[in-house]
Length: 134
Image (cartoon, rainbow, N blue to C red):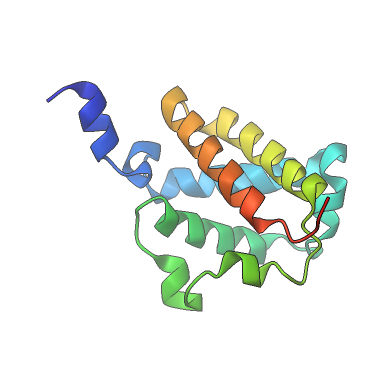
């Protein structure tokens, strides 16, 4: 079997290195969001303590990437767009989220192809999450 085919058959969960590396990615994402002035609007949408958001994103990404479906077990179907309706998710919020995630991916995921695949997937989800016209 060719290496490209073997790579494609492995889940993102396996390719990223499992739950510990997803936890690292999520932790770094929230650190970046909390530190960068460019993500101030996004940061304001979150509570003072980011631990609950960090835990939920970790559990969601764990299953979304092909690992154990921790989020579904605890909270039920993600219904991402519906769960985010109370927040004004516009182009700016989407772009701030994607900027933070892309930086976190660059710092925590060594596999360039996986990083690109995840970035593309996050961009599609981020665009779907918009609930404001601009």
